[in-house]
Image (cartoon, rainbow, N blue to C red):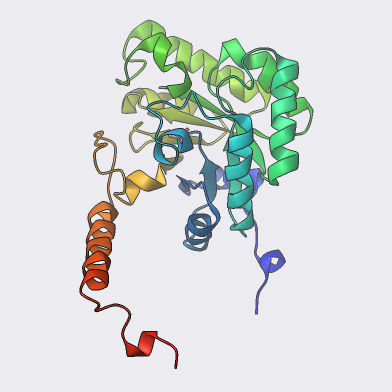
Length: 272
Ligand code: KIV
């Protein structure tokens, strides 16, 4: 029988070696114990406790409302369900943009109160002081460039980022800045494939894409999108592997009908 400590764990070094060996990295979100357990045992290397929990778990329109306490609740639940994957928790909007001291305090709370292994922050030069301060405290940081949903009201749209030369140049310089600051990896969200390929070639740390084409070092999706629970969200980059929305809905309709017709429970589902 194996227990948690027998399993070879994924570390930031594992991801670096995977890049060096040309082995692709798989990353998925999870927000709770039960699904984290499935995601982990299915072999995903990185579990992201994304602030997309604000959308898919809490039903908010954006990622802005989710709080640090709520991220910690989700993070700790995922950690309890995970044996092997590296767990990264998003620093939520408002917990790191103010100043680097606040950013460090938020990152420390996540590490202490969840047991996760790393944090993710959105942005480049604007937040570099915070990134450096968190890393200097020994906390691994994943960057996030391109479409950064916490800044949605600045951009006003979820369209592809960095199509224009100036924005593409800023993305490349931000990526290099984050690498120099010591980030162990960077997520690129919704940027042209050609740009993602170019910057991946220029960085020595692994890049993870979502809507960034095939030429990055790994891919990430929101679990609820991949499983087809969020069936009304249909960006071009999304590949749905299941239609759980319909399967769950059909199962629940059948249950309702069985209850109403007294078909559930039957004798074998009842006690003498
Ligand atoms: O919060 C999230 O799920 C994310 C991914 C989309 C990368 O940041």
